[in-house]
Length: 324
Ligand code: SF4
Image (cartoon, rainbow, N blue to C red; front, side):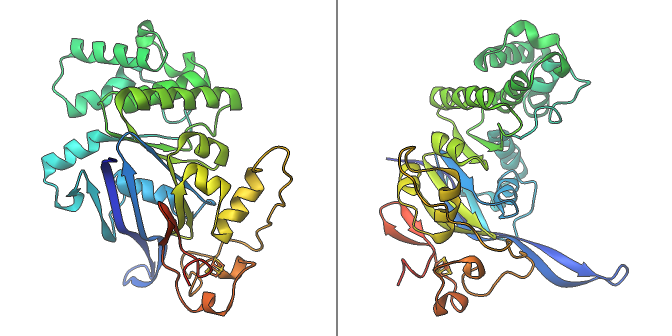
């Protein structure tokens, strides 16, 4: 039976838009994340996909406590994080780590590897310097680097090795969840594939959960158990990775996948071209937010918001075509 690590319910982040310098007044809100529900299962990967600006990174930042939740809740092992005490929050922060896109800028060039990986241990544990050194050396070996690399600086490593160092830093506190925000998009394809395989191995070894954000749908498919597709702050479809790939139901998902992943190299599928730009999250379209760009839209679509509903086991879609 799957155990839920993170449960997000109605997760919402609106950024207020104000006018006036001295007597500033709120004149609107950017609805970056707008009532999103999802679960992250222990030992599994939840992949989030969608065009840039759809709310994936804000969702990740909410889980990392880098943004304040406007409404909704995040439950961590069944406990509402908004009710956490200071020490619970400290514990949560050590249990939820992140690896970001750019291994060139995410590692301080003036710090030795020992200090880069060991920094979270200084902040969150009472390990002695020697114990920290041992832990850093051990973590370096887990990510395929050598313990003797501990005294080097980031510039002495290649891009792939630096991303291994970033993974080691994420692992140092023995977390339960790592948020992977475009972890291989700055790397060559073959190096990126090695990092992804490393992350998969580490996941199995430590029963880690991942929230994976990536624009490369092949990478997301390879890594994820469940995939959620976001559009303008809302989840429009979630399903098992294989199911969403072979049987996408939401017109937006179909368009995304038709452009990126042919169902089979020998099968010529027609690419669905998305018309128009993504509308502003400051003033999203009424009804289904996708309706101005949807080739299958009908009258109800501009009037009623489609709700994410289960259409088959574990396959949920928010589209009036499927939830009549
Ligand atoms: Fe298209 Fe209507 Fe479905 Fe939205 S609800 S995706 S506009 S068919």
